[in-house]
Length: 195
Image 1 (tube, one colour):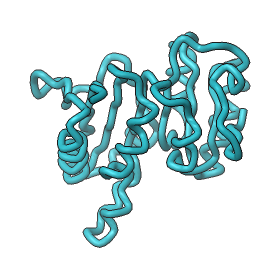
Image 2 (tube, one colour):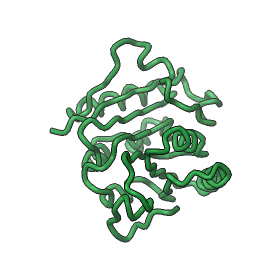
Image 3 (spheres, helix red, strand yellow):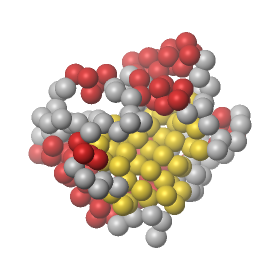
Image 4 (cartoon, one colour):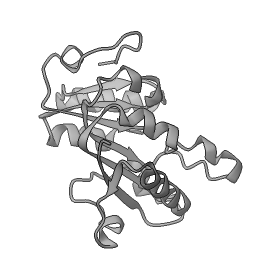
């Protein structure tokens, strides 16, 4: 269930089958969203990354109780393994309510930065979908700017409800339910356009 970090590995080696889709959930917290997506989408092989042991343990318990075998876990920062993933292998990415690093002097620690998108992009298939969600208004603005300035990500919103309303395929997280942010959740969906 744990991803090896000492070598490149194919998705068929990692999962024991050749998945039709590969998804990533970056910073899965307690794993509620990831487990629900795995159950609703058995065709997708999902890699979840989370550095905190408590979240890893909760997800493992949930996967075992539901008999879900299409998930693998990286017990750390996703940036540690992005270069090990096959090029143009990923169909979907979730970055849901990442640490907002709210103090101005700490904002450089936020996950969504130009360097991170460069590392992520090599794994994305053309047309891959990326969802970023936050309940911190400043982080939503910053992330939107970083994605759009990259030039390879098309924001799919057509109206305000596209980013204000919870997407129909979203499963609420425990963190989201606590409503600790300074705004209602913002959901930014993008399509990757290789170029």
